[in-house]
Length: 342
Ligand code: Q9C
Ligand code: ZN
Image (cartoon, rainbow, N blue to C red):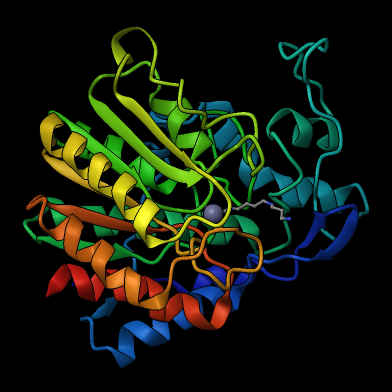
């Protein structure tokens, strides 16, 4: 399997994050991608290739054009206003406020275009976002070109980003962009299988009213886990999309037995749907030692995930999402991929 990777991810570094009332260094750090890249090499998964640059048209197929146009302006505007640190909003248009007003200052716009303070910008953030997007599209092109699978080693991740908002370490929804790109290239139906520990709220939002992209999500129960306000079992899609969004919230402490039963059910529903391509939102923050998660998957479980996905027998794009036990991310993520290839 070929891996697409860009070193430009590393410019998105040194961000700060609000955790339990304190500002701490961000968990979503550059070494994550470097550990994965190193493991791809040491396991000889296949060649590691740079992305091809793309314009932003494919991003605007799933995101609002004004949102995408805003992203490259964030750091320059933040600097112009004399700030350092991380560019973050602090006011959100929640219930009782006007979500239809688009104010003018950078502070207001950061709130307008986000759902939490989990997507900080630093100087290199836009270039990293753009490279991650290019990585996803370049890997999708390999699959469209006839490869059985490809690995988009994206950083920053994407699945919390919705049509017009960032959050949860995510800016552009790389998996959603790739799924839509497959559709635009002639795929009639695409499935997104999201195995990251956190619910992919952005992906769900983007495709919620559509029957042509099935979204299956396995994650920590949002009654007690981030992102709290989406990802519940009764969210099944709307209108034409009714029945094409499927959530599997699971309790803290979930281990392989429970998780794999949900995965089995998701794979069966995916197979019934019969897509032309599968996009896997590959987070490995389900790992027992993940510092921000509550599931108990073990290193030996990850190849089993890959083997099950391989049995679907469909063209498959793996898109890197979360995973914060940095030293083990490579072992676990590449474990899925080598399991797939067996
Ligand atoms: N106490 C992804 O895995 N913050 N995003 C959690 C921890 C947000 C995770 C706070 C976690 C976002 C792509
Ligand atoms: Zn996650």
